[in-house]
Length: 384
Image (cartoon, rainbow, N blue to C red; front, top):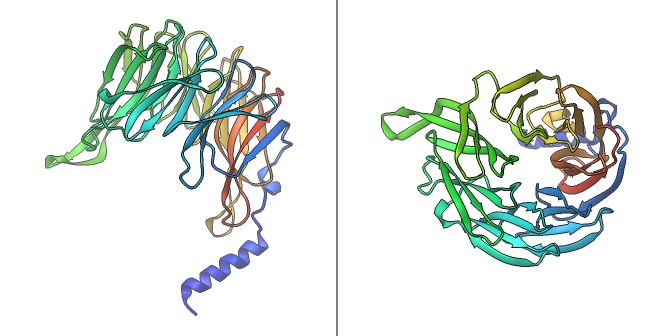
């Protein structure tokens, strides 16, 4: 018998002995504590946002190439409206309850303005960025009622990318544009608004090692993490490279006092409004693991979202749950909770809600080699 067939049959036999239909005792699996769960046959995107009226907005990636759309559900998870928008990746709500949505269409960034009912008021592209590559544009609503979009630009597609930052008003008129180009190739890890109408940005840069002529490069060169702040008028307030031993990457969040915090690998660093480090905390799993997402909590403190992982037979994943950890403003853990929907699960995104709970975007995989299914889970206001 062919060795490949033998291995396949053995894998199937092991799967029968260790069914991967849900989590076992090794993986925890605490009670959900959720108020509702909404499953999707099609894939939904990573973006999730609670609107001012208590409902939720999310980006929906349709299955089988049906495109993307922006959808809204009410506080109970019932559908309200859905609007098709090509290449959509992110959405924000402004101070008047209107919406801005951004994505990439034909490799060029596009931003659309929508009313509170999902009607498209206008759309504009940002050709000045040139052709775009991964990652997708990021969008933030600023405190002065305008919007900032950040775009990765690599027109020659040769790994010499830069970040374009464009601030525009609610009519789509550009207020200012900045190009951030510090290394051979610059990427944006995160952007958050500041209290004066500006933004704080976390960037990752590569200075490639050269081999002979400049077209022959390897990723073995210097790698830097940079934190900088642009004022409401686009002027650079401060800009510095993080020490090598501070962070290797991260999820950026704005703090309630106007500063910022970065979540790295099992590490959280908090900065003041001048970019000075206030404190640096290290954690054990599952806080701030490799897939950790950091969010500031209304009223103070932080929430960290991550996923557990337990390896099963033949390097398959036996199970995994979504974990939310609550931290106070000093970075001390005040609570942790594990959510198990009865399947192998991955956290895609989450957002704290106005009632003290969270809205989770996840993926669950049922059975040995089963297909993934996306879901939304609204969890109650108990810690975390």
